[in-house]
Length: 482
Image (cartoon, rainbow, N blue to C red; front, side, top):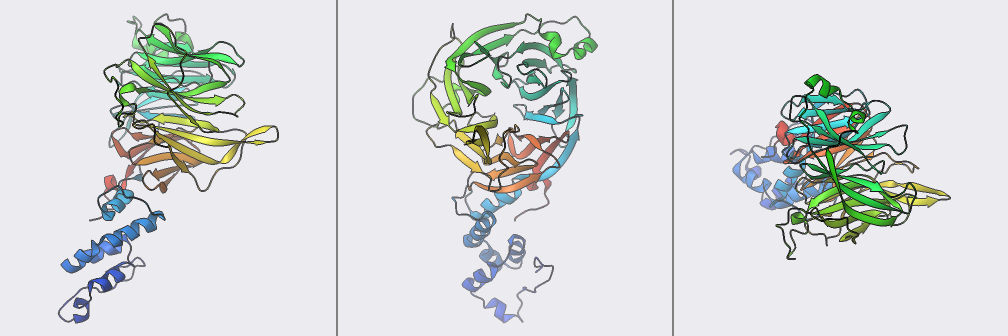
């Protein structure tokens, strides 16, 4: 048998090796307890008796706990399968590096089916990629010019349009939400609207309606109003070349967006930088609480309220609203999770079961509000909102700072992907709450996204202008536990 140091040990029983045949199960278990995974697999191939001993749960439990360094309740039916999950079914293999941007890339997302990927960045370019064994660039469009840039993209469920957020390096309050059509061989801008909050990324309410925000004054306290914007796609007479040349500022004059105020939050001193919309049917879906799930126009709006002075009651708030309401409502949130943290980015899982937040805790240092060293990732279960949020905290935190860099995390059924070191993506196991892998990049990472149908695939984007596709070792088929 080959050992990890490259040497060989003859462990093949034969009629001349009576001592090997006479070894009892406890002795073999003790010997096997010193083997690593590959050595234990090699031993299991020696004979039927050793195969039987090598399946003992205590051996695989010790290997799993040694790998993670903690006790926890396993997910799988056996410890061998659990270790296989942690080794072979986590996206740690860099499958492909894609180029298509000329400056830093700020955001990445998959379409609902997982067949498309969208990226955007400092170059003002939005790219649509066809995901597959070989991911290829499908459509590319420059939607804005310097000093403006694009820092958020999101597909609608039908995968016919893309919502993008752009802002400016020069104008403090300039912020725009735009809708791009991706149904033709070109990508073109359908509608564009200014946003009342510079960092409000917006989100889809349905396939033809997105969520925007306005406020009653420039200075707090002011009223914040969330507005439903339903666009109507015009029948264009222009040829494809003219359509492709349009930029976001060219589309403000279009009168093809109907607006309706949905939610009014009065006299507040915070900005709702991040927002997601959850189907009411998914809210507390695992609880026994009776509710009407037939109302498809009832939504839960999830905001992250961030105080302008970065102190006080920062946190996640959830409001139940009806798209059929005739006027905006002033209502109390149905759930609030206080964090006393600045939010770096949020993401909603495709199945609407989980919300994940990347946070930096706040503290006071003299007259300054500081972002503390620890980067905390919080996962809220939307199936059962009475559960305490899951917390993942990096043991090797970043430095204290007055400023922060945005990073959009991602969550799947078993894994959380976040960033706490500028050029490293941490993959956390949600069952053990331990880091199972670190994905190193050459420069700062801006966003990650799990494939919506397959958590063994992860996309990441970084300041080096590249999109990376990571897959599991199981997909690579280079490492298999029998």
